[in-house]
Length: 288
Image (cartoon, rainbow, N blue to C red; front, side):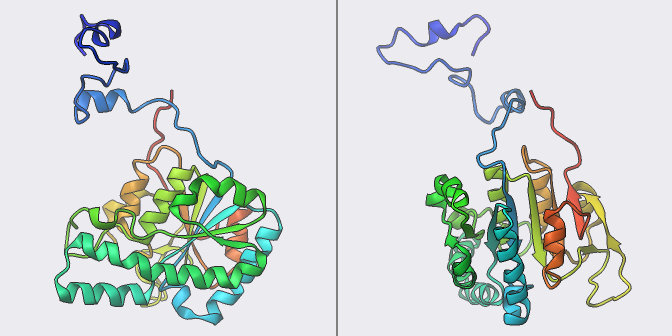
């Protein structure tokens, strides 16, 4: 909008009704405009929940020995009044599907699209196990019903992959989608406005090296997403793209990585104890 123009001048004279808006004649890729829209309040849709992301290969693929004690704890904390959304990844079956897709020469967007059906199987198994305790399937068409589910003491269970479906951006390296279930569930937590998120894996947190290969690997108790990206560790228990997303969030400012093979860690997390590894956003954004 030119400095000499006023909203009243812009909405009359051509026979059409316009919405008076500062964005009306702006390019939405203008760096000046993007900077001008960076402030202001962002309202949390469901501000009183936790997002609990359960690993597919790290937890679900281990079967009853890992999953039954964890679901027992989840049922107990639900009965105690904690409100949360459970998310789950695809695990080994998703990897097999990706391998077949790579062999067939599918593009990155096609690979991302087919993995979601695999995760639905893990979601359904988790829902069946927790059904006696009020578990219910949560799909994107029912996000608006989430508060209703929670008010009735239900346990909503969802999948995270694929967040972009056929519109998955090309990968920086290789052909595997960079936005997997970890990213999808992280984005859902940001969308809903969850104040806390935890990734439930099969390690006690993030280590300098894989603790299964090096039992003496040093554990990282707390670190910023930017520093973790700079360290470029050879292996991480979460997808790297989660770290890039965390640096740009408006609501969710940190997450933790804990060991689901030790279910007590989940209870400790909900009680605010410093378990696992905390990864936080480098700097708080200015808020109007």
